Length: 156
Image 1 (cartoon, rainbow, N blue to C red):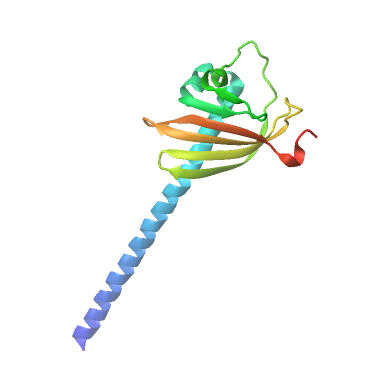
Image 2 (spheres, rainbow, N blue to C red):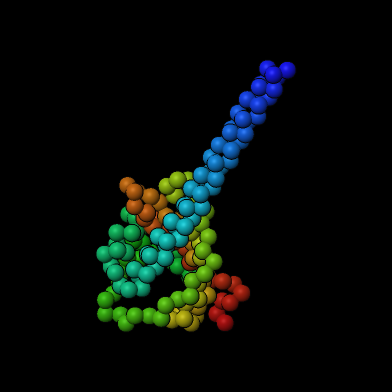
């Protein structure tokens, strides 16, 4: 009987430790999964802030070669046009940005979407922005951007 009891205790200890290590592995994976969106939202917000403050060097370094943008009117923008920061322009009122979401495509690529209210652009005031970020040599680079007017508020 003592052998049976010892076997049951050993099996219980082994099962309990394997379940807890499995749960710990899942919790580590969940932490890593939640860190990714937080990192990309921070990258996105820093990029937006650099554009607002007119930091041409930061913007230039953050935009990937081969960048393409699609404006609200459907026109394409290339990298040279997009990174153009004009120092003579007066600072614009900051947009209100909200509802950031990250869709991870793989470990080196993600789509960041968000909505914005752009007070300095009365005609295209309410916008939905989708940015594709790629990790090149350990640095996140903006590869693609599409801006769409929110239909419920277009040209109000």
